[in-house]
Length: 156
Image (cartoon, rainbow, N blue to C red):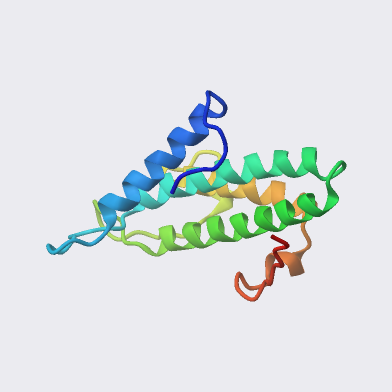
C-alpha cells in the first residue's frame, strides 16, 4: 500500500510504525506450515498499546481539525470512537487468553488492584486511561453502537 502524498521527512515515526505493523501482519499470514501460537497475551498487549497510541493521536487531530473543518472533524471523531471500540475488543480478548506460564489465574480486569498490581495489569491501566479520554467526548450510546452498519458517502 503506497501513499499518494509526498513522503519527505514528515511523520517518520508514524510511517515506521505503519511499516512495522505491515511487517508483523505478513509474518502472521498463514503459510503452508501451521503456526503454533499466532496470538498470545504479549502480542495483544503490544497491539493494544499501538491502538491506544493511535487513539490519543486521533483525539488530538479531532481537536485541531474540528473548528476549521467541522465535517472532517466529525469523521475523525467517529474514527476515534471506533478505534476505542477496537482497543476494547483487544483488551477483552487479552483477558480471555490463558496465562502462558504458571497455573491458570483470575485474568480479569480489576481496576481496584491497579495501584500495586502485577505488571500484567499495564494493559488495564492503559485501557482505563483511553476510556477516560473517550468518555469525556462520547456518549454511552455512541460507544455501544455496532462497528458495522455505519454508512459513509464519498464525493469523489
